Figure (cartoon, one colour):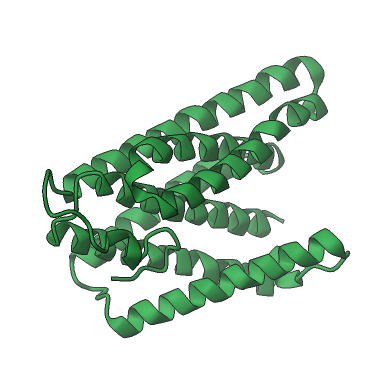
Length: 251
């Protein structure tokens, strides 16, 4: 089994114990819903905190107040993602904290973009939910079949995008150079964002397939948390890319 999602890999499902309660699809879906709820709660708190501070101190004060939550959420989320990837048994503990950390970061990023482009967050949330529903329907109906070639293509493309983003981060950190089409709002930039959104959507299909296979193989109950965590990672990526695409279109 293999997925383009870096946290949902074959090694996590290898040599699992053959005793105890088994992983189920419904259990994984329920845990995914819980993680999403936690992210919404912490994201809403960050948003509310920005509004309260900005109301009394102005927009600069509001942005300064939520900056620690954005960077803290991103850093803590990354650490927890790495821990969960290498210690899947801890997913029941680490996945909820990952969702809360990412919620803080996404809430701050979302309110910043909402101030600049009113209505963009609602559009991004609706599009993310729509993409999730459509990809699940396409997968369950068999319209999209996960073959070895399909899987290898998505994994390779995901790796290429990740490498491109790392190069861009390195260039921006140590030089004044940046890769134009990642950030520009022209036709090339919008086309690139559409490509990445499509790739994130295809990763959802690989995640569905991986979770279904693990369930069929009788993975232990705690792997429901791991599968939910992996789906959460893909959904966070998808939401961020949709926000990027919409902001480019608004510009």
